Length: 198
Image 1: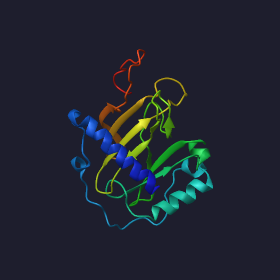
Image 2: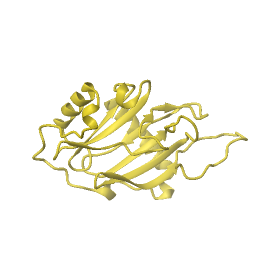
Image 3: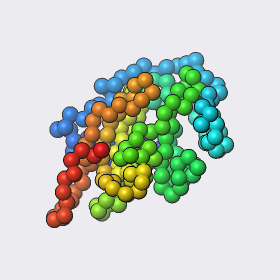
Image 4: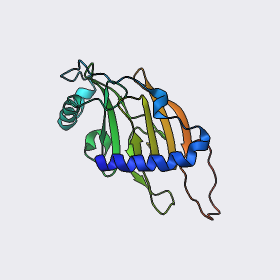
């Protein structure tokens, strides 16, 4: 997990350097004070969440006990590489949930991107190296930064790489910036810029 975060940060820095001219939001633009509690000790699940696997419920309970890692009093949990097949799918799918440490509620999934709230961690889009799904977030900011490719929920259509930043407000992700990843298309005569990623 730490390796993925380091890789994500390096990926983020490379993309921000290429997109600086586009007024990319900064984490400091969305500062929030990190809470020190009191925090809930037990999950407060909805009826639908009670139908999720026992493994998912154990993981969420374990995550609730860990420190704040997002937006002041929340904990983001990311499931990688088919860890939770019932909730997320298998293979290289990534899913995520946002836990409110004050209430014990799971208040959100990762935001929907390209019609899908599950992300595919690698996707060959014609570049020599596939684009890795890279989320970045901090305990003292309400901003979530995501870059990478995502297959639509129906498995067809546009799956190019995009950068999207969100502000997490009232338990909802509000998009604040969208841009295309810096991709070298070389001399590809078939490449056409498709505009906005959504």
